[in-house]
Image 1 (cartoon, rainbow, N blue to C red):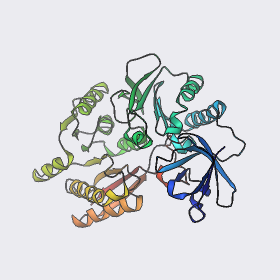
Image 2: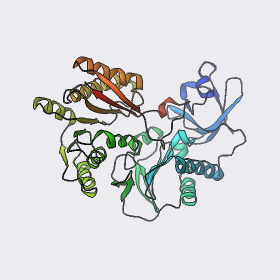
Image 3: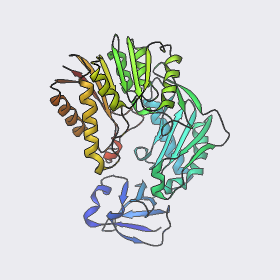
Length: 391
């Protein structure tokens, strides 16, 4: 097996458990390699660190699959890993028939994402090495999960960094990609073929439950509402009115169907508008809400874009605070790893300072339990959700 030797001054992070080896951390490659091959990784002294797949065309040159020198990367390896992932979800999942079944590196299957929507699976293989095992993975998923169907969502642009094509479609027999899932007593529509990423944002499942104690009797504003899940939760929980705003007309059509399906279509009003513009407009109109949800898409996908993202988060939170009476509640989220928890809280505090409001932290929440965080890999922790009372 070819061997990747880590550079002496840059090896500790990987030795401590991080599954990624960057090109700049490699001192030497011994043996001939092809992109996607399995290689052994050693430290600078030649001690075994792990085995993983390599692609020197990518900034992440090696993704480690195992730290057991005797473990073979074969079909049995994927059976073990996938069974472990499924067993974990059976333990932690509550009140839903949809979950993230495999969360990449956190399930020790780097660059593999599998979501389960009421028995239908949405699959992503986001690195060349994992993509080479796709047929094996599909076969094992069939054995372990007995899915009703599988849809491939390998249309994520990150695949291009690995030299992979963008593809999307059925794996095996076709089926209706519009699936209705159950979540915390609600029925919600998921589009496996056309929805964002794998079809639906499962990571907010547990955070949406805060609507059950915040929304009763409230006038609610849901910014970046997408398919209206926070909005529907709020209406079902007893909100007197819900206004959802998003720039995507197709997403809002799903939001209206979700509201109607759960018997709250008469309470939910959805508006197609840029949320930055909408918040400024509502401020001019002197509108007031008792509860505001801010769940924007990632404002930054790179460290270099972070200053602009901070300005964006600060603006929307400042404007939201101006639309809340004393004692109103703000549920504000960031789904970018580069926006750390500490920086996110600091940004919210600065927004409050600039509009002369006081904040009381009710809850600090993170991603759902089916999106576990590998402690050796900070990149796994990306979703921050603050529940704040504004005075």
